[in-house]
Each structure stands twice: as C-alpha cells, then as structure tokens.
Length: 292
Image 1 (cartoon, helix red, strand yellow):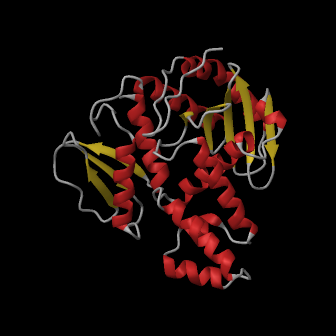
Image 2 (cartoon, rainbow, N blue to C red):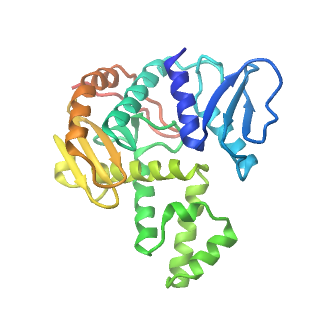
Image 3 (tube, rainbow, N blue to C red):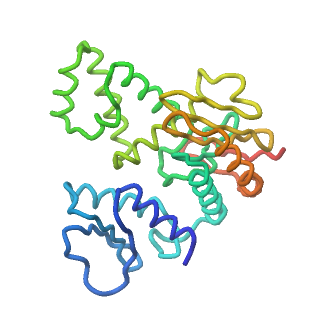
C-alpha cells in the first residue's frame, strides 16, 4: 500500500481520536453509530470507527471531509491529480512523522530563516500552515493562558459556554473580548480534536521560539534547545538556511531527541533540497528555494 495513504489513515485516527480508519470500496455504507464516513471522488469511502458513538457525529463527519480534502493526490484519487512536486513533499512529511515518533515529540517541521513557508510537517497540511500564522497562534495562546485559562479547553466550548466560562474569571470586559476574538479567528481556520489542537499549539510555539519576534540568537544557528512548561523545543540548523524543529508539550529527553535527529537529518536534508520552488497563497510572491 502507498506509504502516503497509510500515513493519511494514521493521521485520521490521530486527528479524530478514532480507533480505526479505513478506505472501503463497494458495498453499503456503514450504519453503525460508532462509524463516521465520507464519500471520496473515486467512489470509495473513508470510514473512521470509534469505541462509542461520537457525541457530535455531524461535526466529526465535517472534520473527516476536511482531512480527506487536505490530502490531495493520494493514490485513492481523493481530490484529483497530484501536483508534480507532491511526491517529494509526501516523502518529506513521512520522514518528519517518523522522526517525531522516534523522538517522542508531538510534531516535527522544517522552516527556513526568512520565508513564511513550512517546507515539511508531520501534521496534516492545511491552508493556514505557514510560519506567520504559527507565530500569531503562539502569541494568542500565550495571551489566553496568561489570563489563567486553557486555550484548548476554550476551543471546545460553544459561544454561550465560552461567555459563561470567561465571565467566571477575574478578567475585565476588554480582556474577555480580546480572548473571544482570538478564539474566533482560530476557529475560522477550521476545527480539530483536542489532541490535534494541542499538537498544533505546541508546534506553533516551537516555531515561535525559533522564528518569532522574541527568538534568541541561538535559535538561528546550530543547535537550539528550549525546556519550559509551555513547550519543549529541539531545533537543528542544516543546509545553511533551514531549521528542523521538534515540538514537545513540555520538558523532554534531549538525548532521545538528539539521537533521533542525527539518524533522520541526512535524509531530511536530501528531501528538502530536492523540493522545487513553492508558490504561496494567491497574491504572494513565489518562494525560490535557495541552494547552499
């Protein structure tokens, strides 16, 4: 089976906290309330199965459709033809997912010194996956948690429950309004499971530590390690301009991270240098891939 397809099914399980994810061809769609499915363009079905019926099956189905759409060009024909560079990108993402697992990290990404491009990621690719948004998300998460509330918990609340939760804090009206505004902007980018939100916020904070306004000089050169309660970061420079970043939920084993990075870095470097230029979102300039 296509490794990219296996990775996709694994990510569906992880994103939705499902017990299993499969692609079915033919037969009747599942009627078990513990299964949520969506149709794929080639006539097959993507099915996520759970131990118990999910509390909001329509929301889970919507997330499942978003995940299917995010993996354009898989051999299943999920969303049409694969771009010419997609094979290289998938291989890089596969390597980063394997690295994150070996290192015990929540996620792994590759960025460069100056552009907004995230060249590789262990996470599902979405439209908002760039450095600028990651830095902004990290700042919003810090703002919310400085107010004494947990960002991930708040993202799971509807508008009324959110208003009640914030009203029970010591925050003033202006602070509550600012936090509600942050959450609205995050939700506009798409919904995720609580575990997926935790990974995204940790990765955003790790990118912020390396590329954000408060990044230290050490983050821009060689090896960089950050150990704090909010996020753990292990970053390594390679090929002059690139940074391989591992993100953790907090303090982590530097020995495990270093060993995993040393093993994976040669292949990751080869895959990154083989990538073509990337055309960012409409209106942005084409990012040329510099060669060291």
